[in-house]
Image (cartoon, rainbow, N blue to C red; front, side, top):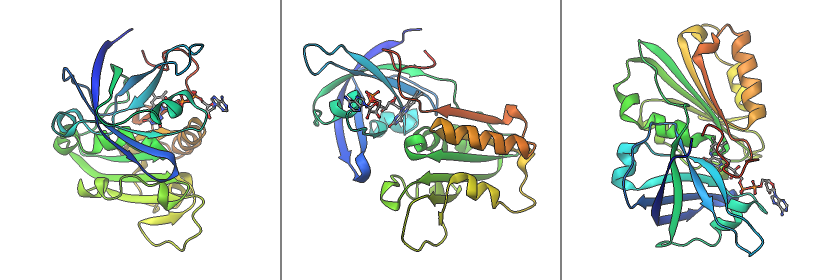
Length: 250
Ligand SMILES: Cc1cc2nc3c(=O)[nH]c(=O)nc-3n(C[C@H](O)[C@H](O)[C@H](O)COP(=O)(O)OP(=O)(O)OC[C@H]3O[C@@H](n4cnc5c(N)ncnc54)[C@H](O)[C@@H]3O)c2cc1C
């Protein structure tokens, strides 16, 4: 289903290491969304033979903080990618167009259960939106844990944000050559999961997983083997866009 289109003015563009871009903007008309949802960014053709395409990006802040500080996206620029190339042309003050809001990867835990966020790369974005949300603060949870996977330390965009919300956080780095100490660990998110203590309450925990599809498949398989009911496993795969909308759950 097509969503409303919003014109938005760019407030801030932070270009971090490893091609990470934090984009903040203000829509002309504020709109609400659920923590975990995503938007679709219009990527105009940059040459006369290129058509406009749309690309999906998850909100990295919840609505209440977006209203205050600007709506935020955390984007990994892919060399040669349409959105990746478009981002290089943007500067503060420019106008962009987005469609919003999409998706059913939203936070709904409580009832004294545990919550475990698992994300790789920019898959941290919707998890951060959930973790910083009012819904999360008000939820009756027995514990919060996040396991965030990157290749190297320089790729980690939001150190400290999950911790400030009382969430124990482990950063697993698959290709970091430096010696690492807790909360950093060598390996992949699945390696961290495999090392959880013997009495970890697998079946009393809700898992929110976001990132590349292969990681999600691997983690889901592991969790099912551990006896986690499928209804407690929520996931969002950041697949490359194959359609003109770039929106999976439109
Ligand atoms: C629900 C959802 C939420 C998402 N949220 C996020 C998010 O929060 N952050 C995020 O970073 N991503 C997110 N994504 C992924 C995002 O939508 C895009 O798929 C991604 O940014 C790539 O878009 P692009 O237009 O830059 O690349 P595309 O143009 O789609 O290209 C895809 C690939 O092909 C390669 N390629 C394309 N053209 C060329 C060329 N001419 N020569 C060589 N190689 C080429 C690119 O390098 C790239 O690897 C999300 C996806 C989904 C489905």
